[in-house]
Amino acid sequence: MKYIILILSLLSVKASAKFTDRELCNSLLEKTKVIGVARGFGTSENKNITAFLVKEMEKHNLIPAGNKKRSVYTQEFKARDAFGKMQSGSNVIGIIGKGDPEVLLMAHFDSIGSYPYQCRGKTSCLGVTDNATSVALILSIIPELKKYAKSSIGIVLFNAEELQQKDIANGSKYFIKNPTFPLKKVKLVINLDILGTSAYKALDKDYMALGAETGGKNLKNDVMGASVNKILRIRNFSYVFGHRRSDHTHFVKKGIPAIFFTDSDSMVYHNTKDSLDRVDFRKVREAAKLVSDLAIRASNPQRKYKFVKPKKFFTVHIPTYKDMYNFIFLLKDTELEVGKLERATQNKLKKSLDRMLDIYKKGEKKISLKDRKEFAEIATHYLLGSTNLPTGRSCL
Ligand SMILES: [Zn+2]
Image (cartoon, rainbow, N blue to C red; front, side, top):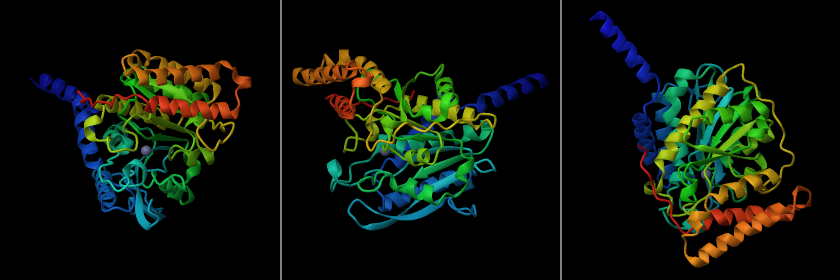
């Protein structure tokens, strides 16, 4: 009898060591629901979500890192909101483990709220896949990171990322100028922005990883290693292709390797359709396993990443020649689906793909900067061009 009890208790220890899919799914759904409200910088909803994130960090006993004294989780700053009004808000920062963090896991938690463009004056732009799901992912894997991380991991949740009109990514810009722990010790940042959506159904297993080359061979290997045996297919693109798209940019400028995980823009990007019912939670679940795996690998003190400076800092996102190849290869998967769309849409998309191929076929040496810009623009239109709205998918 004693043996049976011993064996049973050992089994239960083993079972609780890793998340079950059900636990992970419940956590992702529950947290996404809470965070996925209109929460533009400066609004009361933004402040409510800030308080929720602080509570989550308290619940997991993270070390507060909103200031150098380690007394609060919030790092307050002021910025002009999209209507030009000065507002205050906070980044929310905590550390898993005792020392200064060497690996940072980050995502922005604000949404465009009722900011201009498609959302002007509306309160229904919820920004669920941009970026409530990524924040829910990070919060949901904290218990796993606490168990398996081999050094401290910083959890950095940025505010005001969406205020990009004049000034890119304000929360992260403030943090980089006023770091609350030594940036010198940080060897890798993992940034998540836009998760749980696909421009086409054929891409519902694809997750893009941008910038692995900034951490040299080791980072490329670790990203690959973390995705082995996972359901998601990692599509690699260069840092410059995602340049200026999110918070990690400031870190690369400081010489810190950064990997940026993102889903493609889809029909819900920055509009009123980015709601809970459109989220592909199976994708979010699989992304959680992948990101957790990578963060744990990177936390090994023996693991070093040699910073490789991107060749050129372009002002907008521009594909390299290899990006073009990878992108065309990715879009090839969507052809069958495009063939089922309305004739006019079909023709437009086919023309776009042909044009991208034409540019690519010019060969690396003959492609001008103008060509690269055109390619990037067509690629975005191709992703936003499907008339199929993404349908949500439950986690299990
Ligand atoms: Zn975003």
